[in-house]
Image (cartoon, protein in one colour):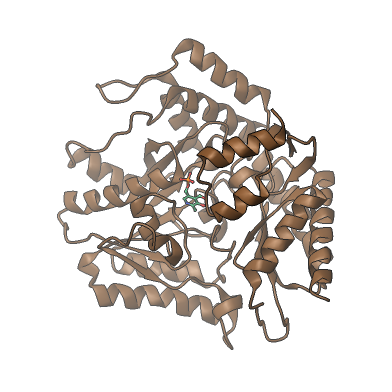
Amino acid sequence: YSTEVWQTMDAAHHIHAFVDQKKLNAEGPRVIVKGEGMYLWDSEGKRYLDGMSGLWCTQLGYGRRDLIEAASRQMEQLSYYNMFFHTTHPAVVELSELLFSLLPGRYSHVVYTNSGSESNEVLIRTVRRFWQVVGKPSKRIMIGRWNGYHGSTLAATAMGGMKFMHEMGGMLPDIAHIDEPYWYAHGGDMTPEEFGLRCARQLEEKILELGSDNVAGFVAEPFQGAGGMIFPPESYWPEIQRICRKYDVLLCADEVIGGFGRCGEWFAHQHFGFEPDTVSIAKGLTSGYVPMGGLVLSRRMAEALVEQGGVFAHGLTYSGHPVAAAVAIANLKALRDEQIVERVKTDTGPYLQRCLRELFSDHPLVGEIQGTGMVAALQLADDKATRKRFEKEDEISWRCRTLGFEEGVIIRSTLGRMIMAPALVASHAEIDELLDKTRRAMDRTAQSLGR
Ligand code: PLP
């Protein structure tokens, strides 16, 4: 088919995520037909450097033979089976052994899912179940953060803090929110560290307002992804952990983006130095080659659920799917054996962060650069001195993203921040290309604004 035919058929059948459908149909989506390493190609033969790892998920890039062969071998051996009928299978068992060899020792059990949204749905039910089992059934409320993102299913959306998403499908009971630790936008005259403490202490105020006997858990992304790649001040996480411990509120890390090496540690909570009770995973678990996610549980929680919990009333047809498990094993072995996570910590991550600051610190549109390892954000600013944001920041960042496509690079725009999160296998030369093309897109955006 020609590009136009693909686009016409697409418009006839698809509702796309998070875009104006009419506008999209009028412009026609790019048709992505091939991926290899760090690159994607569209149906017109144009090549793009993928600066977003798909959707923060292709840690190893595209087209790895070892992952493809692992899937194919597993399909030949056992294409499907489940964990319902007092049954298990080697692929899922081997995966869990490997997963827990990479996680800190305080975790022991996992409930597999097919996506990050499902991992967070399971989170809510499991956390509430845990409190029932240990004799505190009134602990039901989950506290999330405004602008946090935990997925698009009903409860994950409610626990997330995207108000425009709440409008579609409505809110749920027993969910509450506190502010995001977004110093650049909301920090006023406070230092980042003062602001970090203030945001964390909102959690204490919220727990006291709701009653600690009613609060089950606090859920947050270690760094906030879809809400703008926002890195909290250093004072934030230690204070959050102190408050959760004080009131016996479970600390739940959503590591759907942060997990599997993104920050140069296997898990982002290790980078930020806190110890969550649960870890939601997906995306990088399989490098996005097949869908798989999971909810990782601390020994404390698992022990209660296994020893006292009786029947765990939850199950998905595809939990621990053998093909997904086989791909995850190949993916984790590659990340481990090729020292990819270590390289992000000691080599490619610092290189990306250094070059980014060299190239963008003096850029007329950039007010702040945040990031670590293979993830970064450029904050757009109308006036750097006063941290004034553009009134039409959404429109400006969208324009920059579109110019990026024209330049042959995929970066993401969210709420006035330009985001990048390349595959963890990016070489120095590919990082240079990512930044050069991003700089050209940013320069053209600045020119369009007369700067
Ligand atoms: N949690 C976080 C932090 C995410 O960024 C996402 C997706 O981007 C999700 C959950 C939802 O994952 P999925 O799209 O696999 O359902």
